[in-house]
Image (cartoon, rainbow over all chains, first blue to last red; front, side, top):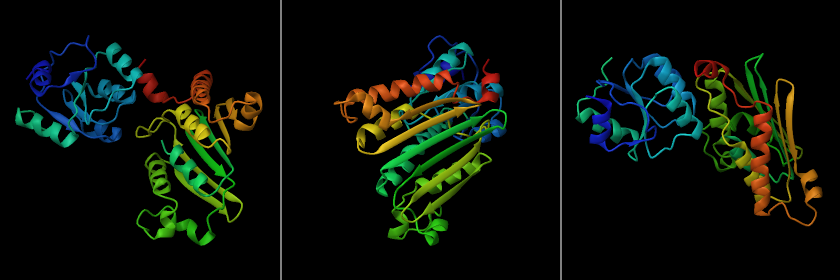
Length: 114
Length: 186
């Protein structure tokens, strides 16, 4: 499913409006520990996290992730958004906590398969 | 991040002076955070227990969860933490981290933290010092008190000033960097 459709169906708020959302997404990963995400995420994952600082953009770039979903209503830092725009990394936000956000992703067919 | 928690411990221990020192060494890949006070101190036999989160006696709880969490954060980032204390003289908490460790949390808004501490405790002396490879920033409330004259440190304008001054000062000395991430994001 295209990232754009996922975001629309699950009602995510897009924090990086100029970034294209045409990536096809099949899988996701959820973790707040950056080293864990670096080790276990795979290319094309939607990454679910509560971390908001600039370094999440670096991880997304390094692992070629499809995008980042910030949960529990977390707002990205200003420099995080600026860098995400520059690097074309989509960042979304939901008021749902991680467990609920991941559950809804799973319901529409996005799995955690490695 | 942890600085507010630990400074609160110092205040709860009756400190009249709290010193926060941060040093970033890019060459040694090391971040050190030191918080020292002249409070009533921790008895020697209590020191091993203050970093044990499972000790829940009332006495141990007097220092809160700040120390165990700080220790855990440091150890998760290739560092560690030490507590030095002398009853009646004060306490010094020293933690070190690998500066470039991938799981290290950013320093956070230190200007805000110090601003709240200073304006909320106008009779306590605070020192904030930050070194980055030889460059330094320093803010001290006894000097501020003198410069402010009749304006008390509890004035809301002081919060604005401290926040802005620290933010600008840290930018000037290049504080808060993650060299590896910065290279990746170039």
